[in-house]
Amino acid sequence: MSLIHWSFILWTTMILFIHNLDNVEGRYNNHKRQKKNSPAHKPPAKSPTLKDPSPPSPSPSVPSNPSNHIFNVRSFGAVGDGSADDTDAVMVAWKSACAVNSGVVLLPENYYFKITSTIFSGPCKPGLVFQVDGTLKAPDGPESWPKKDSRDQWLVFYRLDQMTLTGRGTIEGNGEKWWDLPCKPHRGPNGKTVSGPCKSPTMIRFFMSSNLVLSGVKIQNSPMFHVKFNGCQGVLIDKLSISSPKLSPNTDGIHLEDTKGVGIYDSMISNGDDCISIGPGCSDVDIEGVTCAPTHGISIGSLGVHNSQACVSNLTVRNTIIKESDNGLRIKTWQGGTGSVTGLRFENIQMENVRNCIIIDQYYCLSKECLNQTSAVYVNDVSYRNIKGTYDVRTPPIHFACSDAVACTNITLSEVELFPYEGKLQDNPFCWNAYGIQETMTIPPLDCLREGEPDTIADPSQYNCLS
Image (cartoon, rainbow, N blue to C red; front, top):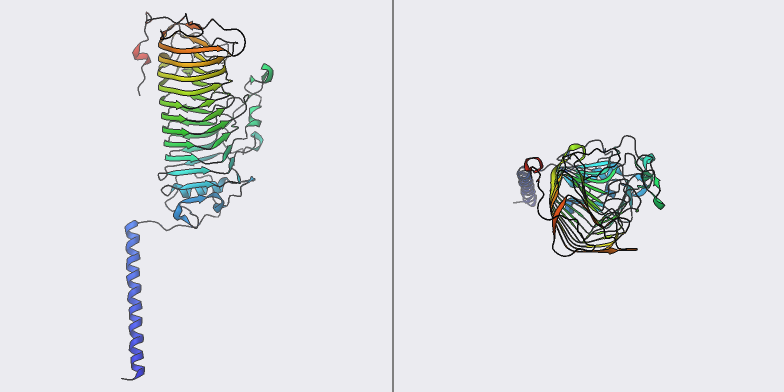
């Protein structure tokens, strides 16, 4: 057989082999797509928009290397110079991370990302992380706030499960220009009454979400509340830093409302209002290792406003420091409310120069126009153990002002020792219609607490709360 003939046979065989190999690869790849049923990835959108609050589509934009599931906002066009509006870029990164398991939205260090009022919406794949290693900042005051944006809130995390907000960086609220708006008066330097906030945005809000973690990041200078949880279930707050000036109005550190199963641990909070405030509908809250300095203390309430029902149960505050504060441990309710506050434990609390160290105020009112009403939120089963330190002598360190019609019951005090920070010892703690026991002698002496049970107990049908 000639050399030309052998060459022709060899060439034909190679062509057939290559053709069959292509067919095998084609069948294999087609089988994999059918099995996983996964959509093809799209390149990042050139003009992302903030106007669509719906969950991300099943074909999100992703960066060029999605295998590690880290979505750096700089890869989506964020400038990070503190002046440019990076809202759209951060939102596209969010939608990309939302669509994968354990996705990370990364705001890298050494950059300043300014964004406007934004809703980070779910549902998302589990394990989503919003990681702030640089600085995330709000517009600088009311004049810089876009007219189309809500003035009620800045960052909202909505309908999420198993989401974490963390990082080594700072979330900056730029609240100073909001604090001086001429609406609500607040105490200024030297005791003067000065102007306060009008409609001001809460800095960070978690809404209708579950299994949340908030850890490590520094949150500062909120126009109003720093962090707020509404309708959430399962919250872990750990090693958080919250700070605003002492005279910044309405800048509560952490506010809970209709939220259950909360742990707040090893955090530092200083601001111009409540350190931690517990609103209606909260239960199973554990607070430990928190330092409030200065603040308005840890508050349950206010509760029962406008004759509403308010229920708070199973709260523990332990191993906590409260310094230079207007209040220490406070329960505040409006007249006319219903519901109950029950199962509260305050243990191992150190006070330093605190007014109203221990206070129950069932006559809470923001004006002189509140009328006496017979109904009240029922306060029952509250214990104060190992509460020690110093108080500001301008007010008594212990104050139990309970409703005429609905007495406070089952109050327990043990090892409560409070001395004046400066000045003369106040020997006149105040009690009104408060019942309980002293397991040890209290300093100053608490002779006004009644023993036993009141003649008339609150009607359970009116004050019981459904969990």
